[in-house]
Image (tube, rainbow, N blue to C red; front, side, top):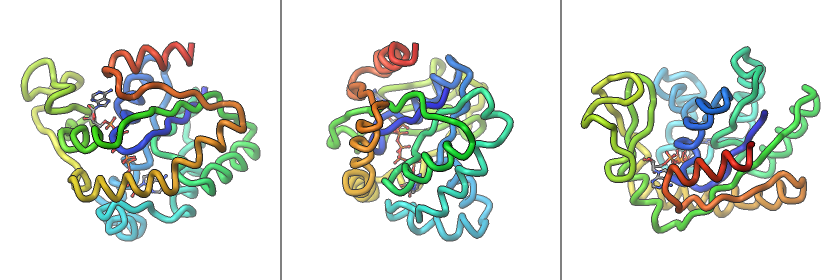
Length: 214
Ligand code: AP5
């Protein structure tokens, strides 16, 4: 199965991807995580991406298309994958279609999480992840079962993203509405788009998505 998750920053794409990954055995491919890994190892891509990411702007289309083209041919994608954070422009969506056509693949579902922008600042400023396994948490909405200990791997080391501040979130939301939101119509025309209320509690959102995926 190939699933694309759409939605503004903080909509819950990463949170739901992690759950669906476990439930359906699909590989989560997060372009944000991949770019952050490039920044951490100070590769050429990372150096180019860092300033753009820190100011809340998208990285160039061709850079991310090349990354995705390589990643989806990896062995762990054979049973299907979830694209979390890609595509983000019409050009990326068109390139993905061309790529899939050349590889004999097809999109099964595109799910858009609809949310209120105002609530996203609170979500993003409370977000943190396990530094060891990447499991996502929130200060208020998703706490570990045992305070300060990751549910998934037991680590006590957590991290917060450098672009998770109120000012950068505003630019990220602007970029989303200007460049990414038009993708909904693109996928509506292709007949694969479904929407889910991303303002519902996390478990309810997962339930709704599972209902669509079957
Ligand atoms: P990326 O890492 O993709 O960030 P984003 O799209 O801004 O999305 P987020 O990760 O902030 O939000 P999310 O929807 O995953 O929310 P989450 O589930 O964590 O991209 C970062 C940057 O990389 C971009 O700005 C750009 O520069 C670059 N980039 C990446 N891909 C690119 C591309 N294709 N093209 C060009 N540039 C690209 O949830 C947030 C918090 O809310 C969590 O703490 C969670 O616990 C909580 N939460 C989730 N759901 C709920 C709920 N239903 N109720 C209450 N709380 C909830």
